[in-house]
Length: 334
Image (cartoon, rainbow, N blue to C red; front, side, top):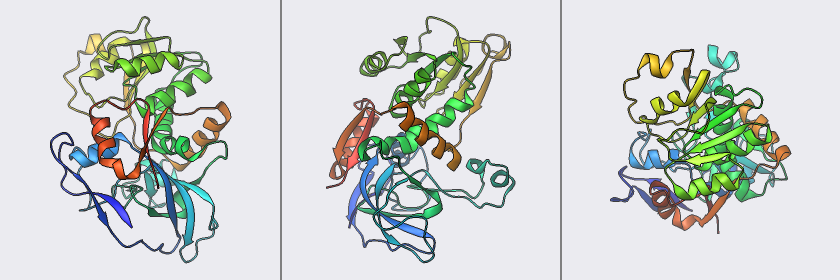
């Protein structure tokens, strides 16, 4: 089969970190299922991996953790899904189940967690293998291309929204407006929030307004009113104090990315006083994923997708790096 691998991490604008090679199709092990890929979302984490911001955990790993496909083989003891079932494969691949985090419903913090497209091969391929306990049964309302970005951009964005502690009918600021933020905006608006978007991309601002945002301005600007909550999706640490200063007293900033550039020194009185707080977001639990997928189907949340052929994965990453993707790029098999 043909797969894309991270060969030598480096800037996608000036090097070729992603290379397409031929490998044998993997066989599922005990408790695993093999999934024939129909679509795979292109996540900013894939870009961080390709460019070396996120160090690869093994040489030649296949990226991609927003995978939609059909089960075509079962490993020994696997029985949760049948051959022919449609499933989703997400970032969280395995946890120990024994540590204090796993036992307390916080498996996203498991120190022995493993991740799709980082520790193990992901969905930039014709097939991939996943432990059946970490695959998702997808709502029938979601087609393959629409479902793919929801498996990371959606799920992790949903956890970021929970971590931002947005009050009912509150004022939410979204810094950066890519795949994750434009899904979160739909969820927040459907739940009665007022959404303000701050992003450097003019095309993303246009999408934000089309999706019902109350305002859309530059990333380093100020929203037209104080915010109850904010989520930083852009991997730009210099926006942390900017977002904090936009918060009302008691507001919360959630930082959603797996990678962030350095945060400048904060001014306590101006940035944090009056009980403003900053929270990080780390992956998600399977409960988050199940809740979000049900919610997305019920609320009619749909990502704005930019389908690309699987053969053009390298170009899709380059477009993502250059802010040429509006919404979510999705690689389509065939």
